[in-house]
Length: 76
Image 1 (cartoon, rainbow, N blue to C red):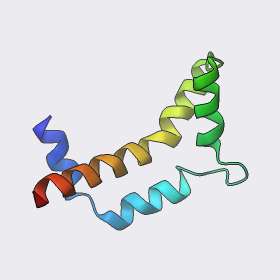
Image 2 (image 1 turned 180 degrees about the horizontal axis):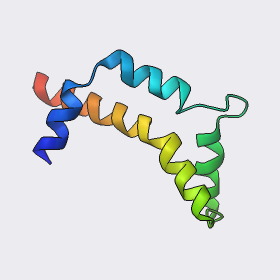
Image 3 (image 1 turned 120 degrees about the vertical axis):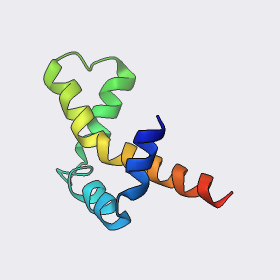
């Protein structure tokens, strides 16, 4: 786990934010991640392609949350 957090700490903020805005929100009307999260909540996320889409569009947001967490922990 320390290795993952170390790698996340070395990532550039701008790169993560660009990933979130592009891959994380694409297509932009409506954002694909919102559609996949609503499918997950409703229990309609059945096809392997849907799970892949959720991972693909959600991964930049997970990176951003990890980066924020590492940043806040280092400040304490």
